[in-house]
Length: 82
Image (cartoon, rainbow, N blue to C red; front, side):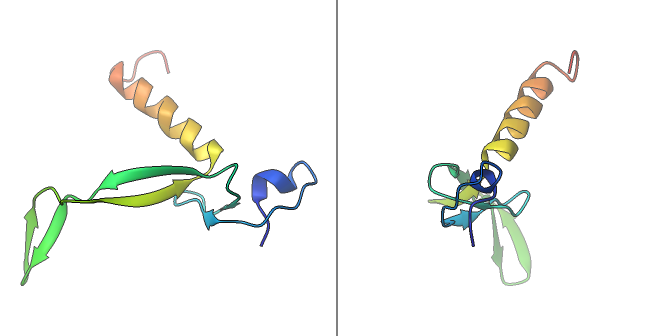
């Protein structure tokens, strides 16, 4: 599989992963790795909300990273002027 962003520029680069939001394949250049804390554990049949000791690693493409950054900035402003 080749990187979706590279393919738009007629370049073939192998993917290193897929964006967790849109599912596009991304190469090492276009992948945006992030850490997401795990905040929930199941103990028996009861869900216990507590921070985990380690964070999960996730990948996003540049497009989805930009959208999430824009949405976060908008939410900080209370949803005004977005």
